[in-house]
Image (cartoon, rainbow, N blue to C red; front, side, top):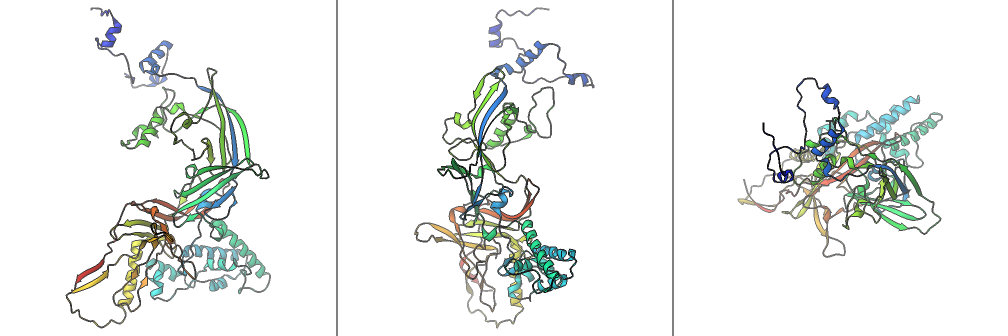
Length: 602
């Protein structure tokens, strides 16, 4: 056997004259037994062997650095103490209410066009009141049912909201004269001077007991459904989004957090923009707190991250390697790079703050195991870009302010009670508000297309059942059609000029006529059935027009939905409220509306 002798090994390696394996990126064992006990022990008998394996794996190519041992941080914080919804007056900030509940709350619509709505909640209130009366040992339940009762109205053109829909009619017929309308009682006793025992009992002690139960009943309803007082809410109908601001006022400066465009459904730091104003009023209560803390940095941990100890298996529940991003999914690629390459380079600062606080990191130093102390700056300060972005950073002059928003961690959402799609129709040069989900009288959302079809069919059936008119034969072979029909759940919005402006326009809600052939009645204007598009129609006695800013409806359109939401706060209290969400639509659409049509006479 000849011995291989290389005269110049350095030149041979560069020129790769002799094929051999000098580097491995991955080492895999080749077991020859079914028993893996000894192989999994990873026995090490030579420290030099470990160093050579590190060289084989290419670990010596990178620049090594020291590990953090201790860190010291100085934080100045202040607490939110004022809240302002849209253009309403300021009020004190409530720590015992999640901020989403405070912002999104809306009045539950118990009537629509002077007709009863949300029958399910009315029945719930009635059952609770009768239970209160029965538990108090009083026998006045029948009297309350008679006074605050459900009545099935007569069938005519004005009661299409009941008789056009079988499910609504069945429920109405089942509760008529048998169940109590609890909301009527609530309306009555919330008027100053009215009491629950009025027209029921005039003598004590039953009268006093019923009046006390009335106070308990109103308090129960306010806790059951969180609603604004006197219509003070942050919803902007012309923008189809929420607008509000919070303030942290102290003796040094006022920090104002503005959320002018909130519609996502989950409220957090990215919703706000921060402004700071110097406060020269020294009489204001100090609301700032400063603290210096020393701690030991700890590694950031998350499911699926590579384990730092190579002889230990990672948890297979989260497989980052199974992500299949496309070439345009930059965010997914960055997440994979962070999770698989730089996961061990991130450390956590354990610092506890109360909810609703604004914290500013005044200084942070870190000492490594070599005894070196480093002053840590914000990531965006090390770059040259003027519009640098960083996680948890609000748009503000101060780049190191952290908001711990008092938002709900988990929110349970019901099926949508209402949903509309605002779609541009370039053929008819208008915007359509398509009611895809319409709230029924019994408190459930129904498909808008089916509601419109059943309502139209109901009116046509009444017209056809009347006295047939005298037929007049056509003398011409063609007829003129002024306008085609559009489903009644399509509400038109037409462009109109803004007042005192000849150039800018906005969208105004309009109405189409319900025209039925041989109808003896004058055509009526079809009004929207969702509270989202009925803005201003419930203002009595003079309904007001409804406008939407034209830039809010892009070519993609938008979708707005309303549903009940429920969450539990940190003290265990449950909140139920009615909230809105806005999403991007599905593009342009066409209603098929056409004018000036010539039709052949059959």
